[in-house]
Length: 380
Ligand code: GLU
Image 1 (cartoon, rainbow, N blue to C red):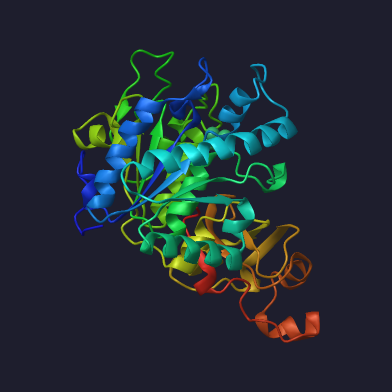
Image 2 (spheres, rainbow, N blue to C red):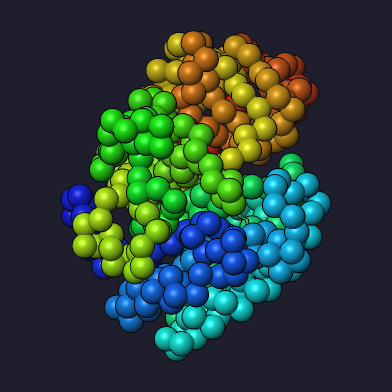
């Protein structure tokens, strides 16, 4: 984006690469069992306007399960995992066709990308997915992205498209993520049961206070409540991507953001991390935890690597190169990093001087437990 930070209502055209996340309940009319055509057409108009203005646009679209259950006429209520996966297989075809049609009316070529958690968590697959999306954008296609619900088992699924969208946005270095939602932003209390709830228009930084506001509102279709949205905000803003949550319950929802409709803007951190660090910071599945002493914590904060001597506790069953959470002596998260030793070796060399590594492990390992190039302070 341009150097200027967004004010309350920045123009979306200030941004160069925009990811728009659309929730199932906006897209699918569950009573009628079909896509909300006219609303979608109005969103496609807005997307086309950005696209014509030379912006790169991507859509993260939910709706495969909701559409599949309508097509299959499945009863209301919570679906079992295998039922929702099979419903997604039916619904995803309809979803892709719908997007291809609405964008096609504006001479925009839609493309479909289905990802699983592994595609964003494993570095090689991450790089591959990123270069495919880059190529599609270069061809001026609008990629339409969803989780590959049919194959993603419970351990390897995002389960919500808020965090998926944030990971995709940071993966492609988008400068804006728009979450079109049931609700027009963040409130200091759940507005449904609190008439005095105050709307928060701007979040310069996501701290404990903001996290505490993220209740657990969920609608019929969507999995993500405000909590997953704030988590998405953390992933996005740490990596240098601004995020806005706005209501999708209006026609032309993007235009409406620009005309100053109520929304919550989360500002990207002033010092965006590099792409490798962005990947580490956003890692959703750290495999373990290193607890470190106060001396090591201040060394990390002054830009140093984490040495084995500063580690006082090792938890989890991680391998070499896995992402781990680093906690201070009080248990608070200090950062995340890629660890140079597996959990067993890490436990053997913790509290020890790096010069003893050869003696203890019988191999000449790295002097650092987590090298500073592999370390991101502040957590995801
Ligand atoms: N991937 C799911 C679907 O397309 C939606 C997940 C969500 O609603 O966040 O149905």
